[in-house]
Image 1 (cartoon, rainbow, N blue to C red):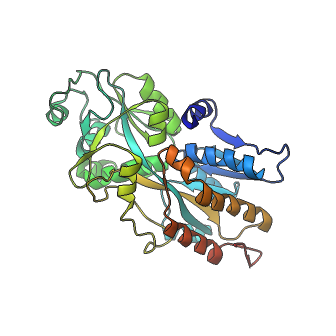
Image 2: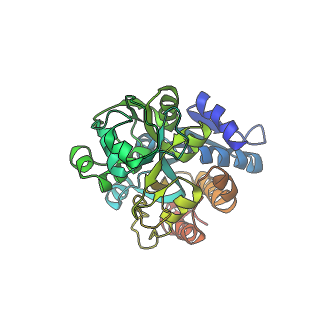
Image 3: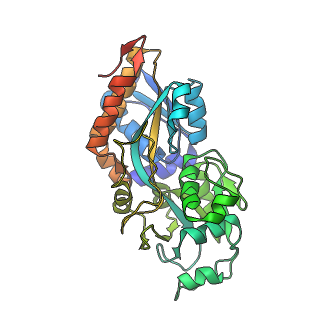
Length: 348
């Protein structure tokens, strides 16, 4: 039911704006950024509006856009899947904290091959996205997939056209596992793609892959499910071929050292573990350290607090991984120590 509702929402809108149960909500909180967490943020906002009568307006414009808007203070909060390093947070007067975790999934449009049957390695994926592997029956792919009938079909690479945290997670992974990718492209929210066509947002990439025979792209897992896209089976850090799932995302996140991180800068790609999905990532909220309006800021933090306390079931139904209680406690401690309005602490 959640996914059916979201398919229509994301196909028709690039903005999610859910009103509460009351006709005139006293406050509208505006956010913008990553499309990676859009499905779960949409459902959290909808539910919170019904329960609390507060309107949460979140624009799915990509992490790059969200970072620019929160730096310019044109929104109340930004969202990014690429964590900012302390040296970028500090001069911008921002803090960040993780809100939810999930997985980036390579998806393909190849007739006759069931979901999870095609095996790929990070090195092979890098070769495909570099344009060095151009057909699905390439010997390197065939050797890894004995018994799978691979067509002599041209591969169409689909990537993001906008600055994107999903791209940062994906290219960060390729950068770790492929020296060719590291030397020729690297990792960033926007890169100089050697091959392929661009789609705006996870929504745009999913739409392209669905429409173009022979296509391969990368999207957040919920978009793969919602669009009934065929995911691949990927070799992880420990050499096991795994499929994307809440369990494999959790396995990747299990060793994350949030407490020891500086400014919650944690990267979850290519983590060890038999069951770890290798392209796992967290999505982060960005807030100004100094808020202009105290009551507005408290209303916004109350929403995030509600999501941590009451949003786990919604997140899990959409195959996201909620943040552990220990991390939530660290986040709230950061709110207490870092967020102010006119010199006074905002939280609690």
